[in-house]
Image (cartoon, rainbow over all chains, first blue to last red; front, side):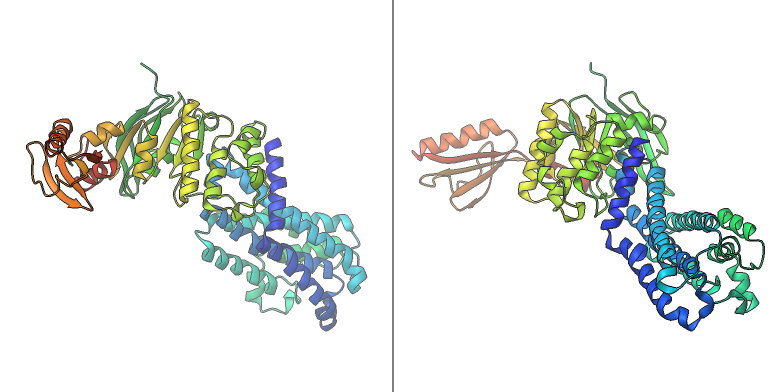
Length: 228
Length: 304
């Protein structure tokens, strides 16, 4: 267990040194949050109350789905996984430390957004903070699991990138985080219902903000955990 | 008779329809430096990866110090140190992090002695991606030695390393041998194998083509020994064949002969020089090299 903690600490530090990871875990999500918070919420006022939740979903989905798979594929392609394995480090420990490190970094970003959105952009504080944090944890868990699955199954970097985009772009457009999902044609709404981001948005609205959800918010939360 | 630290019996490994290793059997004894040579695709790395428990053999058995590589994988990691041919640590990992991580998983303290021995003190705070090829190889060798393994597998440890780095690694390998550590060395460098290895196996097409000491392998060569002589007055230049040697050529004052029986041929040539009252300034005898023997086997497709 001591060895695993050491591995996790080293992975956390390596992620902070890796420019491509920093970009997708911190810089792009926080930059996008700043743009959406200052500009987009003025254009679409409906987004303002739940800004923290929508930006948390965006950041976590981007970090986990765009950032994690290439990192895992790179470990495999460079022979690092084999080097670890040959040195007595189980592959499952590498996988878990990679996921746990992403979980921690993306939690930090989500908490920065959560703490700053009300003061910076006039977003509402959730009525139920526990509900917000539980939904956030479920979303993190689910997104990291999906990211690891994509990384583990993709044969190479181009495939990983293609699979990541196939999940990330619909998450952005169909989940209701950028504009209400009920404005979409029914086919796209149906497609959006397979995405964790869609159910997370519903869980945030129902459990954290006390807004009307299209169906039971606890069920949405369970769906997110189930997908994870 | 010593018990082998590694016994490979009739090892076979297939990838789909492709047979990568086909019935290889060999034994390696404690304290040996054992070389594995072969052209690309000969099955060297696959054989080593089966020993390292990175691949499951299709058939055959492997025993490493009494352990089964797959069933006893956890214990094997304490007995076996591995430097892989195609591997790299993450580019952003610090050398000290790599040392700490592998030490932690092997349950031993970070080895200060290895850090000093391989001159890693000044590299400790550098990222793996910032190291030169030679420095990377030194780090990888140190990592393979964490936990004091009995058997160390080095797969092309000097590939891509400059002359100075190569000499340092050779010195390190000799040091490990002097400590009684058993080493398996897979390499393309014939001179390296000849100078470092006690015994050498040559694999071709997944099969064991030959196995023996470097001397045994070169002695079996069909190539003849070269005798090269330079005398003060050049009396032997253009001499032609003698009884025990065939005249080959002359170049820059040196006369070259080929012979099968070295001592009588040298005696005969020295006699000729003495009779001509021509002092010998340089005399060299060159046995067929391991490289020549290797090429004979590869081109001839010989099999044990």
